[in-house]
Length: 295
Image (cartoon, rainbow, N blue to C red):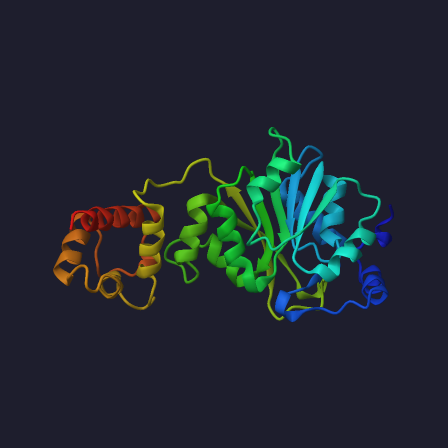
């Protein structure tokens, strides 16, 4: 198939949109990619080969889906917008290794979809151009469900990608960095110009690759408690760790208790949350969890 016939070109995309009189819904964050080379780079960064199974979220009119079908063994794609289903049936006609699922990914049983569509020995990847307004809820759902996948490679807002891959002592580092890096090795693999989207988004984009870790890098006594305490430590970035924790534990621990717990694990309460490593946050969460359990 010549590249000019691929879905991911401005001409072909306009033909499809005009044929179906399709209009973009801002509420669904729809921005379609119209550059085959960019899609090829995403697929290469994701490590997709002919044995791989791929899950896509939000296929749109099928630009990325088509390229995934060419390079992977088989693809399942979750699409929430019912208006796109007949378009996808048309644009992806001829590819027999795609299964379209009309469902909101936030409500989907992804474990069941994997079991129904892929072989047990298959390497499974998630590859998607995610709606920017709902990136974080989607990724956190996928990570917390501990799916049997190798990696997640997604096009997202550049600022959010930077936060997810950020290291301590940087402006972007926060509770989201820790939540994502608890489950994965996060790396921004490429930046993408606004010009390759239709319509052009208002924000810059990056491709983030999340490689799933076999086990978390730290031992925590209670994962929910750990994530909650991390969020509390970043509640007000300019405040010290001690002040943020004092506000969070109001009614549970007095300042003296908080100081004592911080001292017991060798963490200076005058530091800010952005200076703590994940290991230090794990110590912090475990110490407060044990103390609270014993009250």
